[in-house]
Image (cartoon, rainbow, N blue to C red; front, top):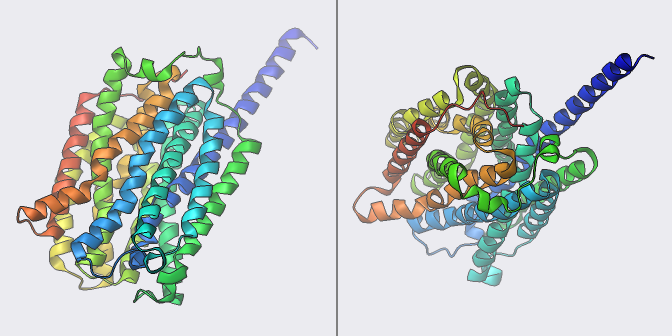
Length: 444
């Protein structure tokens, strides 16, 4: 056979192998992010109806809502710690092993949480250990997307990066929908009305065990099926990725990404973590109704993500970020006010309003993975992506405390979330306007 024909055939085989590797990396990143978000939001969806298992009965509704949120916030604080640690080694030693280690870690921690005794057995130690385990869980969760998402983006064809990134993040609303579906089924079979009801005593553990099982499965998939990023493997390695990230243009990019993501986290927390707590503990909406509303909202959000990603590929990621910032401090807070002001008149009305409020905040996550990865060179991409995405979560993570402060100033507690929403939308808009368009960037 002529050398040219041999070379052509080898090129086709190499292209086919790269395509297959990219598809496996994409599938793994999607499933990994689904499991990551499933684990992340377990306290919000699953423990919401069962927090009395870990709390003294004498707490006020506002303190119950705050303690409920702290359990979630501690895992958010752990994420930037994990992103910093795993991001450094993701750039230095490779994306794949960082992902494998982090997946195994949070599979084990999630299993431990599912085995915890409650307040009646261990007193205040039960909630303390729960929050500490959630922090450690957050550290490992911060490593998952820090390795997996840059790996997938480096395999993505340039013209499909927006679509691939949005598909990966579809795992987020789908995981919330799956949790809502599982929790709804459990609540229908297992009552949750009192501290000694079956769901509160042991039913909530089932989704945690499922989360540990899912994480173990994707851990094995990465070990057996997902190759290392070829872009990273061919790139010149940086001796100290963290030091390089905090210098010159890399640091300026990180600061701008931090602003964008601070806004994204404020608006996300307002609709996915604070809103359910307000509805349950302040407005006293039935837990099944709240869970069903989240189920419908997140299913519709899942359908919207890929179209948002494709639109960002067409008109620009920066444009979508600007539009979502505008929605975050105008339409979102107005719809939230209508939701709280109207009260609980019907399940369908509440579901519609919860869905519309979510649509003013959550679709920005269809854009951020492609956008942030395009902002950093290969040598610091895992660090930049992981830290930019995660460190920005720290200040918004304590939104519940800011709400208590506003309540202390005389603002009705249920309306303090409006301030969180407005701040998030403004920061997102400001951050987007401060940065460039990135859809034409080459990742290699």
